[in-house]
Length: 124
Image 1 (cartoon, rainbow, N blue to C red):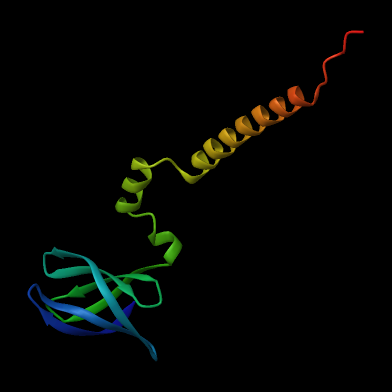
Image 2: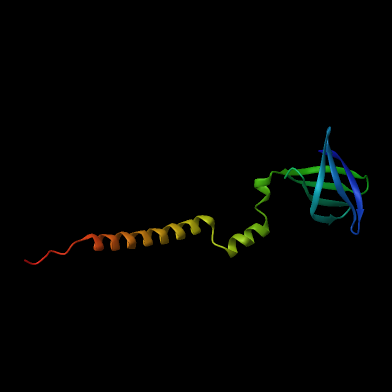
């Protein structure tokens, strides 16, 4: 799909600063990745509403094309997020650990309370 893109000059060349889809103008929050291919560049950009766009810039004709749009949830599965997940236990595992430890503590407290409530039989 052809789109209109405004650019700004940077050290790496021209980078997109806003994307125009019909009458809607979306400002680019940051450029996540830039891949240079023969006669074209591929940008992955983050816009301020939380979505991620993959756009291609054809260098010979100065043609911009929309390749893909990802919502916020889909974009979270990046390599960085996967590395963090591998470094720390998953939330569900943490919940199981916490509730398991809590259950163990509660069982010990109940057992101590039962033993303190029992009255030894008095010898007559």
